[in-house]
Image (cartoon, rainbow, N blue to C red; front, side, top):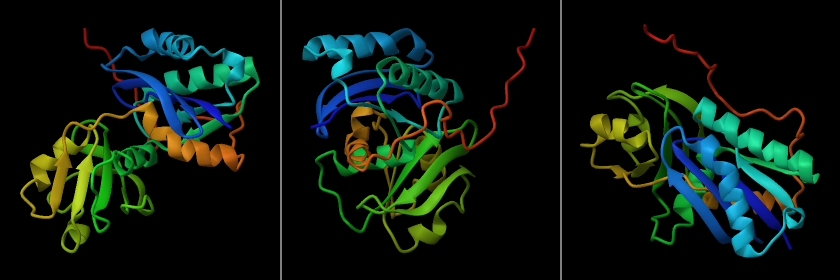
Length: 229
């Protein structure tokens, strides 16, 4: 048996889920910018209370590791590492784009096996963090920061239907929305529940991170802006 606490803070969505053997027992979520630090520990506490569980009954902590928001990732991963240290539990990291893809695969809707899945995270202006996966979750184009223009994904769209989703997909719709093979899911929201399948697999395989040295997968260096006066 495995009881995993799962944390997702890579985007504007702040989400915490509790999963037993890959089945979500409950989750708390809010999709609002700059609120992660305020609510994340409350969400953890509330979930455990509702489930009638204690912290030491957890078997591991799983966290969405990026790419995504620099601040969001720092908050989520710092929280996960703090719990791992305090409880002496292992840390499991799941790449955010991968967990998003499995969120679509496991959503319960009919998914054509020939459709390629393209999760997108907003990286400001016309840039997104993205990758391309098959309908079975196999990555066929590596994670990258891409500037979206009229030529983006044209090589794949010519021969495949593609489904774009995530908070970066809307800027792609502006450019590629007219293509007959391009589909969009505007209401997709990142959730800690999406980590369940991959987190369970990693737990069973004992694929754990070094809690002391693990860092978020930023993909790009953080550049702080200057405040205007």
